[in-house]
Image 1: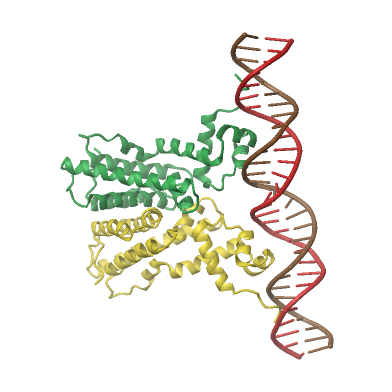
Image 2: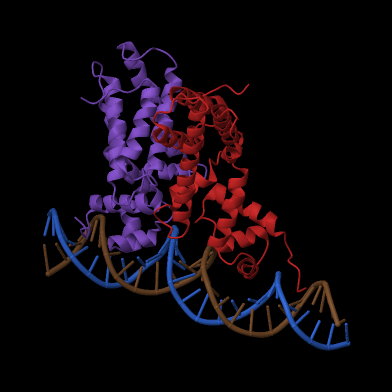
Length: 198
Length: 198
DNA sequence: ACCGTTTTGTACACATATGTACAATATACT
DNA sequence: AGTATATTGTACATATGTGTACAAAACGGT
């Protein structure tokens, strides 16, 4: 019951995601977002509560469709190294396929907001720390399975995170797939974390 | 002749650099900067012309004091690999010594402005491309001098740039020197581009 | 047809932000 | 002392931005 919304909440989040992806969080004012969505600020606040709250929803959607979300599906028995390699290649593909070379929304947000936004900053920090932990778990599994040596796992996890962040930013400038993937692959090989994907 | 300025232009640039470093370019409005400097917007425009023009001056100052500026001083006969290693270590040191973990102002600006600002964006892109070219020249020199094999020089240059960008962003979250430098060193070793600094 | 409920539209009261215009001020030089 | 010159202060016109408050509108159900 009650008056129905004049717009699709989920589609709105998708649209806002792309706006923030392109222009950054602070550049997307409530006024600008509302106008983009064709709704009043009144409806905006009523629907999303606040810009911060909306950003958290956007982040959830973003993480679900991000190339590295595939890392969450790797199971014992899978070739971890092959899967990690595939994720890095997919990331290079995704970044260089983007017509506007926007890089990674999450990494852009880290650069913009960590240390500057009291609520969003820590959330993004946590996301990075979780990603590092996930790399660490995966590398431990890979070591157990004899894919790599059980050496410097924590260091290698950080190196992978560094590589992932780097390519996501570099992709704003280096927009050709091979130019992004070759150095990434080269680095993975150097770390002993590369197996060709079939 | 004429009425003298009530403030030190160079000190003002330094202050603005730190403001932009901390908060990003767009967050630093002419109004906010002017108030920070204790001058009127009138004086701001009179002195710097525009916010963009000031940013270019800030960038020049920033690049001069940036850890990787040492790469410009490497000469034929020097151990290129040792010098590159030292620059990466110095970068890790600089980023983790920063009390506020602001990362690298230039990299932050790339994330914020490339693809979004018509004038500053291309300038920053150019800076990255120049850095890549510089790595390429240095690696060629290293190959000539027999420090490394003459293989995949362009790819390795891109890998170095990727690594440098990555650690500069990662440093906003990973604030401990060893946690930043170990994976960086590990990656350099994997690339065959590491020699201990004395 | 009426009622409860939810969304929408409109208004208010501010604060921030930009760029320009022009008068007031403070210096150096003659 | 007066003048040229550059900086500084004040004002204007306008746009954007925030958060709240409350009336108007549009639905479902009785």
